[in-house]
Length: 239
Image (cartoon, rainbow, N blue to C red; front, top):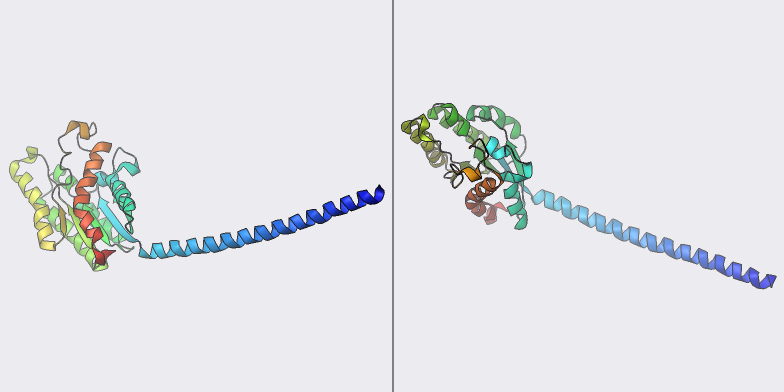
């Protein structure tokens, strides 16, 4: 009986060692597989990062998504559209509430330390609300465009057109609106005719201040931007 028990114990030990050895081999195989998989994924991520281009949204509170969560602002919604189409672009939201064209001109140099492939310029609304001379707004926006091209000669530039109510006078409102169409033509950049098309003056699409879009309003802004941007992103030479 003692001898029999000895063989039972010995068999259990041998089986246990074999099982551990098999487990180790299996673990090593899995680890090797995971390492290979991780390396492959890492290489894929690196390659993808190298292909990914940058879209910089440079604007004021409309771009920043004042009163809303960051992912509800139209630049984030544009990123969602891009991701759904698997296009190789990442969006950077550089909107600052209260920004004027003069403030943007001073701030742009810092942002241009990074490469930019598509630049969306959304400034001027606060100039209009403050009654700043449209000629001054024109010069500031023009200088921003020029600075972008100096750093990124091949960048695609999109200008977001803006309008203001005639409470500043019809003449001023007309001159202000023409800033964007004239600038787009002179600098040969793509133009969103009126960023707030379909939203401005519609109470249910604006927050209580009557100026900043709601979540639904931001969705319309994203559509207005996408109508102009989509063809640019899909051009074979840009992807």
